[in-house]
Image 1: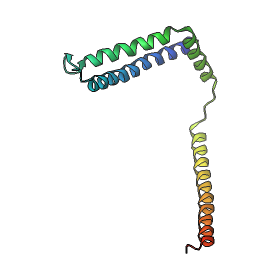
Image 2: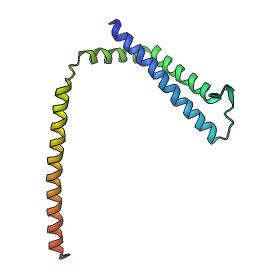
Image 3: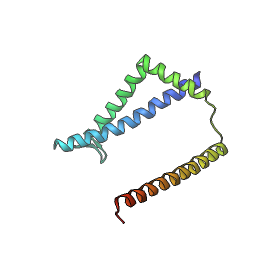
Image 4: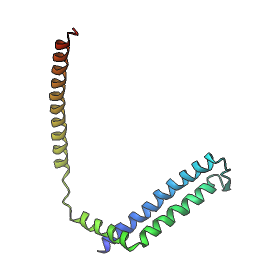
Length: 128
């Protein structure tokens, strides 16, 4: 089970990074809409929006990680995903070919029905 916990914890770290990026951009957008100066604090890339977004993202990930219900749910999902038998590359390629062929056949049938219905409607209404 240590391996599952490791993957779940890694997922929370990645979620913290993604949420930080989102909150940074959102904070910059809000500051722009409100016409508040997003002053540079340290160097070219560190502004108030990056600090606020980074803190919000990390705090949100920690709150989710510390929530027993959410963390146990994440572990449960990870455990179930380990039990899944994933298809091989060849099986996936074959399934993809079947889906594409089936889609083309259904598209041809629908085109034929649509074309025939249009021609019949035009004939009945005397459009041609």
